[in-house]
Amino acid sequence: MDLELVPGDAIANNKAFQRRIRCPDEDESTHNARSRLVEEYECRGVIIHDANIVATALTKNVPRIVTEKPADFTRFTDPVAVVPLNAIGREM
Image (cartoon, rainbow, N blue to C red; front, side, top):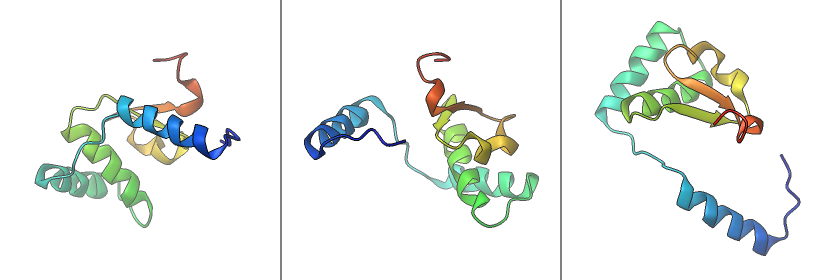
């Protein structure tokens, strides 16, 4: 998604976004959850990165993942809600 912002506006937009989001840290519980997800969903390759995002959400009580690529998380919709970025404002 290209917003065609001038650099100053893009920086201000990014700062506003950072004030509104929560980026939880990974810890041992996250690593353990990722290992379980990788095994349960038979993840291979780059899908392991998606499993890591889901594991972080699960262990930090983050109720949903908002993404531009919801298809990347299709296999994980049972343990966590996946919201397409373009649905923000309609679903949330």
